[in-house]
Length: 423
Ligand code: GTR
Figure: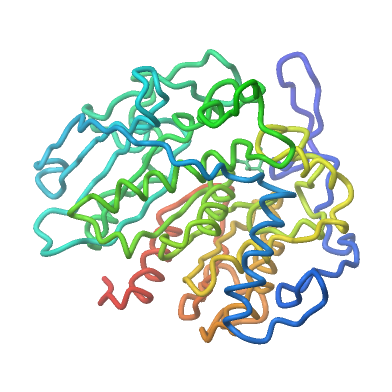
């Protein structure tokens, strides 16, 4: 434990920087029973792939929509696009960079997201792609001077905080674009704050108001929050990739870190067009089992980030055992598509073991669907990835972050499942 002075407030922060007052002791994880992904709510056992597909999968999807992330509106919004830039000689001629503005709806002042895309040059035919949202604005992903600086709010600290030139390239360690292009993949990203700014404003900004019924001013208790909106934005990015002639839309790998990992999993669960889904340190509300009460808890996430989940999810504060689902069932919704979960040793807040157990809990569904599932039963040793099953996993040294090591394993996993020759 050490004392930190933050502003004028003294707070206790345990060594390792994890928030104090939460359980980091494996011996204190309570006894819990996970809901069985292969037993219907009425007690009927799910014994065939067809039963999973037609009955249990829709039932679980509905439970997550109702109780956790909120329902995503079904109405379709017409997307309006403008190509902002194409540079076929980016990155020393190795890449084509393309930026497209995507307006959500016909109105002149409709909200929009900017898609930033890199395609590898000199590759024959369509290429697979890695798609993920970024935390700081597209201009933070690479130092390229041409990348548009987002006009949306950035940082979850202040409602009027704007992006600026000084952040150009600041997030590039999380986006090893050249290394990914070299392996023959396109890289596609958008800024999550373009879709829904990440602070609690009662859902006045972002995409939610586009779907309000007459007189509605905020989502109902079972309607989406910000995670739902970010997931929806990922599906809109997928709509665009389906039209991109350089991209093989049947081979889009969706990834996300932390809160954006939660959003990626929810997007991948709802939208089966994503071929592979990757959760990087997604923790509570992502890959980690809620019932373990290790690190972040349901009450804490609903208090710190009341806008992320739906209103109904608040009912489960301190009552994880009464949730009709746990996060292994979210991961099971990705099945039979390849799923990769990864953790970091120093990221106790996200509960690395709980993330692994989430993946393990999804395994019976993968097996029922005729895939090899997860090939191990115990959490693998540090930096000993398991990539050959349909569910992959690794834990690496270090903190809550995205690193080149993580990307290497993701690309190995994607190569393996797309039957590509590899590096
Ligand atoms: C934390 C939050 C986590 C995780 C993380 C992030 O403050 O408690 O659930 O989402 O933020 O997104 O960086």
